[in-house]
Amino acid sequence: MTNWKTTMGRLAIAPVLAIGMVASLAAYHHERPVVAKAAAPAPAAAGLDDNSASALLALDNAMENLAARVTPAIVNVAVTSKAKEDDQAQADIPDEMRRFFGPGFNPHQQQGPQIEHGIGSGVIVSPDGYIVTNNHVVNGAVDVRVTMSDRRVLAAKVIGTDPLTDLAVIKVEGKNFPSVPWGDATKLRPGQTVLAFGNPFGFRFTVTRGIVSALNRPNPSPDDSRKPGQFIQTDAAINPGNSGGPLVDARGEVVGINTFLISSSGTFSGMGFAIPSQIVRPTVEALMRDGKVSHGYMGLGITDVTPENAKFFESTDNRGAIVTQVEANSPAAKAGLKIGDLITR
Image (tube, helix red, strand yellow):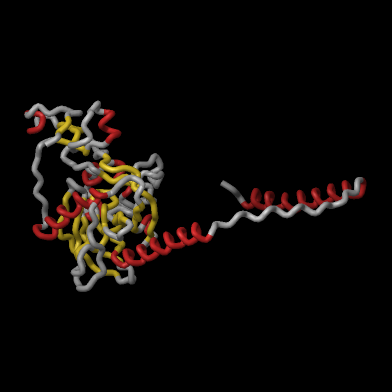
């Protein structure tokens, strides 16, 4: 810890050193005069040709227009919840997702239920106020407030949640809300441009740009083989507080919902993951319609075949799905399925 004496001592050193340097230079100049030479001007950096500059400016303009079109449909989700005494709710969340949940705090240790506050992100997907976010953002919520892009703060109701896919739908009352259309994540290819929207660390309405780094990443949580994989991996910067925000393609369509990151520090290190729209959209539609989702159970984890994992599993066929998990005593296990099996139909 720095005290005032140390600080003042450090501050006092600077003038002494400066005086010493001036004196030394003056003495050197007195004894050995040196004729100053003008430095040669550095060559001017070559500018971009008109075609290259125009291409970059056109790209910037397109991204600017895309961000301006999507941002009005982004919301900040502020949640008040009661912490369970055994903290089972947190135990059910993988470490990656827990770090991604965003700033939360419990400043007072009091008797009775403990109150926690957290933040996340969401995206409006219909003009009548339905909002998609993550289940782990609103799990156990007793109060949900959303901040719109025009700074209005509205109360939101939890319509339904699905822990298996980590998706949730909340709703605000009103009409004619700005919304973002659904895209098709099955058409994504590595290298394509994507934008991540959300509220990292509470910095509202942040947009970052990156690419699709990889597709069909498996579920990182080994505790439940029923949880679907197929995650989109991206290097678009996402951090705690981005959870529940959309991943948008160059058309301005939702191709994923950001849900977790992998990092040794808990902050972004180039590996963010989003639930793809082919999982998000039917889940959200079921939650909007019924308030819940019914899942079939096989006790089986799969991922799509890619040239990379086909080599790993020694498969010569690039079609179908590869079994990545088989739960003990599950229907899949009883049927004889094993990790590494290739399912083609």
